[in-house]
Image (cartoon, rainbow, N blue to C red; front, side, top):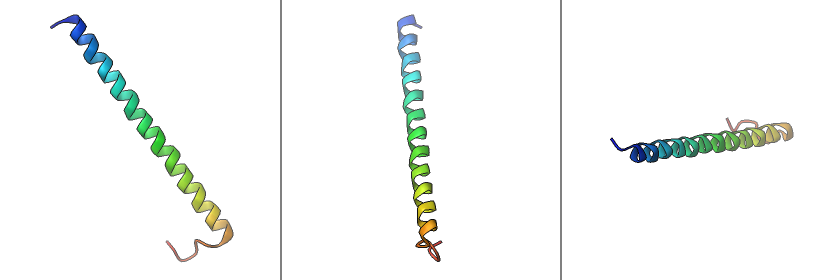
Length: 51
């Protein structure tokens, strides 16, 4: 079990976690944007009967 190999795998795992977290963060921002749009629509009364 090579130590450098372990370091590389560990780094890959951290990198993957970061990408995963970024994806979740982006999804949250995207969902917030959609939610905000829905609230905007609600305020103008355009969203009635669409749900």
